[in-house]
View 1 (cartoon, rainbow, N blue to C red):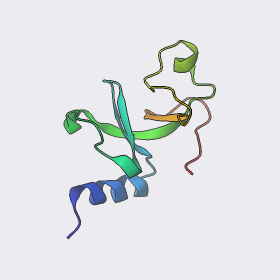
View 2 (view 1 turned 60 degrees about the vertical axis):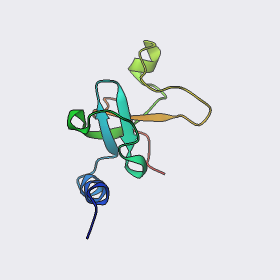
View 3 (view 1 turned 180 degrees about the vertical axis):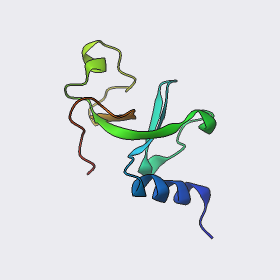
Length: 86
């Protein structure tokens, strides 16, 4: 039997999404679903968003805790070029 996390990951992948996000701000990629303690009912399917050129980063309003390995977040469909899933 497939567990809920696997089922959801497969469904999000099939529908072209990169993970989940919500306005808390919070986001999780397909390989790390439900990594936070947030209420999953607040989550929505989201897309991988490249930090380079992101208007939220330029406005210093980025929900991502920047670090050396951080180059994307999961959020609503971006209005600028998306990062490629690697």
